[in-house]
Length: 442
Image 1 (cartoon, rainbow, N blue to C red):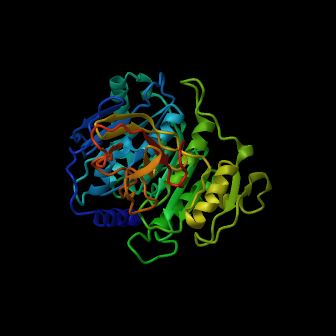
Image 2 (cartoon, rainbow, N blue to C red; image 1 turned 90 degrees about the horizontal axis):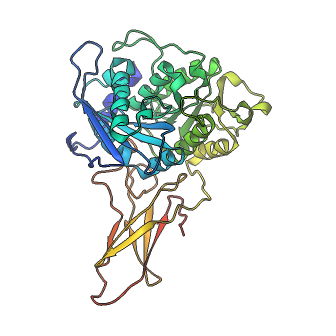
Image 3 (cartoon, rainbow, N blue to C red; image 1 turned 120 degrees about the vertical axis):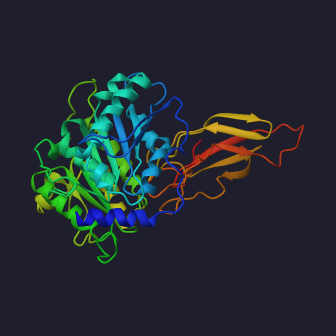
């Protein structure tokens, strides 16, 4: 309980003082859908209002799953969830697997107790599943109520996602827990402790945190994160759970560059586990493809991972990784977060010119997202859009990023005005996408 309280107080104080109200968000017009619930008034109901926004890949006939991007504790982080479903990089993961992308936004007042939503047993589990019924009806995808889930959560969202693994292991393809895990002991907010079932041990889980959260810095306000993660990881792994730890050497509680490992990791797990036919159970992770690595001593002394069949260390404390490609990316991430990428992003489409204004569409690169666009006129460089990408927490990205790994408001548009165009002249324009690894599209 102590480390979770620290998380809440620190996060609430680390975000800008001026935040938009909860009713300022991008409009939810198809392929986006939104539902909102007022705070419950009965025992066991969610005590805060909550807003759920969902994106459905255009053209998908039947959804195969749902990816949930869950913000953390504190009023600022809760408000950042209002843009989570609009993130182009996370949409690329959802699109690849025929999944919807859902971002909740719990309307938690400033300095209120986030345990009252981040423990799913306090009403947020029920509200979440109710939203799937209604969003399924709104979007014309009633199967949303029964498809599997892949969960990502930050801070209190990590507590929520991990709690959902323990409560609903048969529904969850994989879960990434950034800077937060569910406490296995009873808490003041919820006196009934979680239990670790055999089914929960079959769900791939990655515990991700910054080394400044109690690994290398044991004195700051986030120092309780690592002891909580270590306790959860040790208890799960001792029972054979498919769980790993990835410590970011550059950050504290902010999300940093974690998405460049989180999205490929989730991609690998989703690909292995989602059934081909709706309604069938999740498939088990292929044991023969797993790699293992010793849990880094002190979180920083990293030993290279090896195939599970050749691993000679203590398996009950080893880091579980789903396959060789992810094992190699993990080794790079825990060293300097510079996960490599050799694949260029998709080329932009539907370029339109009206007067001197250009607009276009583009999908993000699954591995490295979108950093910027290059505008060419008559075969010559004209401009970068944006001129300089922003992200105070990691690699600069086209949409900018907030503390809880979601785009800033207002959303950045794929738009450019050629102020140097001369009236009456005809020009030929090209737009090229650039991912965060610096690779250019066609």
